[in-house]
Length: 132
Image (cartoon, rainbow, N blue to C red; front, side, top):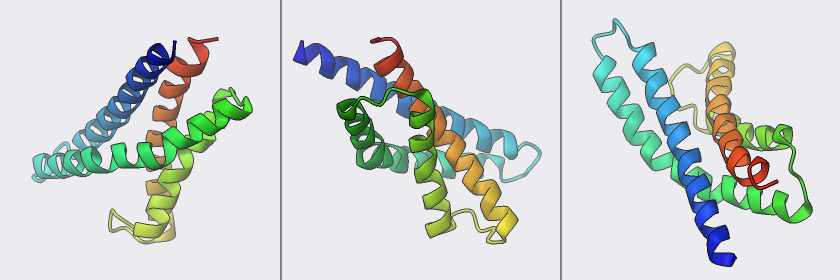
């Protein structure tokens, strides 16, 4: 049973990271349409996402999931909030996109939080909903 749990968690984790990665790369591709730097922007986002998403997942997403599981929280809303937090913190602390006005930071936070929320919902779906 323990091995099956680990396989399910690994599968859920990989699907969560893939969903976030796909959304990130897809969004940069779409935002760059008509821009001569479309390929460079998308490639840069793909590289950064490939590095950061698994790190954030391992340092935040997985421990939060395990803690929520341990204390019995299974609400998709709570998973969504937990998934949104790292994106907002990331943008606030690092200002990675170069638009440092308040409206720019809010838009960036919303984008990054949406990516994290999507990953959290995918994890919730496979770990909580399908296991219920």
